[in-house]
Length: 236
Length: 249
Length: 70
Image 1 (cartoon, rainbow over the protein chains, first blue to last red):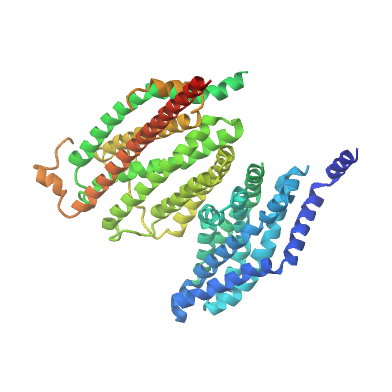
Image 2 (image 1 turned 60 degrees about the vertical axis):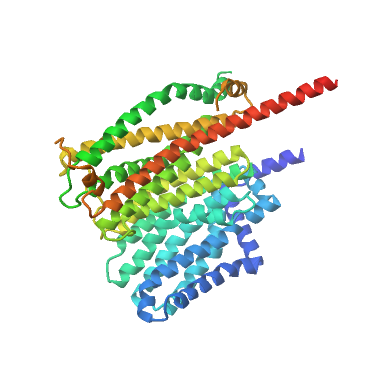
């Protein structure tokens, strides 16, 4: 009797408030685990600072590769933090609860992806001008870089979510995740990095932004569907 | 009742049907391949720009064009697996992945060899080669995912999802790579359009080679799918009968 | 249209001389590719049939043993 009322109560929860609750829950958990929050940013910082050590400290050489370096590092940082997306929820069983909830899974997955982006993508975007400065990115390209990262990193989270959802039940998933997700992320990397490079040469970049926006729109509509389907398969 | 029948019956039905197809496919492949190779190696005239190396095109273009068809095929098979839960579709999807990786790998290798005299370097970040390379990675991802998941049912569905996502992404990757690399000229000025600058003595043998390689692709796919059927249905009576009937192995 | 491009076998094998290696490497790779993809399924099938035959023989042996014991 009580259970029935409970289920009735859950059905009464609107999709929007379920969306907000999922988002808030993920953000609170992330804020409580400071390490998980800091790791992607530190990783981003370390990877970017490896490039001058590996290539050359020469400003001319560094500024010519700076756009690509920042973008590739952002991609890798997003990859690294993906594992947090469903892993803990899978292990403590709350992912199953999420799948059982009467609200459309699409929106719950979307909420989790947005939370992931706020935790791991946004700090990278905010930190990127500092790193761009260290790599001698020409000043006229700063805004383009920040904007492309702002549009591009959500796509990385959304695509990455599909890969994590497919591999969440597996024991050794680190490398498989990279092999699945990285090829899917290439269009964003190509367009984002090229926009920054083109601005450095004084070329117009509005078409780059249009393409990135189109990819983001496609990812927002399609990727959570694929993630939801993948989660249902993985959790069973 | 009918659904049950179709589910259990279809791999066997395919196996027995392919028994009848295979000889015809072998014969047509043999004919097409010998005509095509003979024509491509001995009769096609030297190209005024590329000289004798135009003969590389008769391998590279068919292989590359079929490697592009593999991902959509895998996605279609994956969709059928997800929607109708047809066992045979997943067996086909599982067999396409390694063949697609092979085709893409060969297209990359022959493209590199061809590139050595078109561009003077074994590897160029040319749009076609680059998107083939990324497609190769995608195939490796599907194969890796399949081998990582223990439950065959979950592996089938997971690979189906990945194949569909990948197939949606392949054109985006191709387009963005081409756009990234607009400075390069197209790798081959090949077209089967009859009004194209290429004369028929160049494109007719190419068509023969493309159909030969297509038939070869069908044979390779059927052979692998048949093995997959036997492996998965090894406990059913018809496979046990087939094993006992098979005298000389 | 249907004329042989080479007048002798050695000329054919040389393929114009400049890119001999490239052309024959491509055709060699193609031959390897075709033969591997036709032979590999055959090997797998052979292996499968042998395995199943062995298993069937073993099962039969086991069941006959239990019969004699009973």
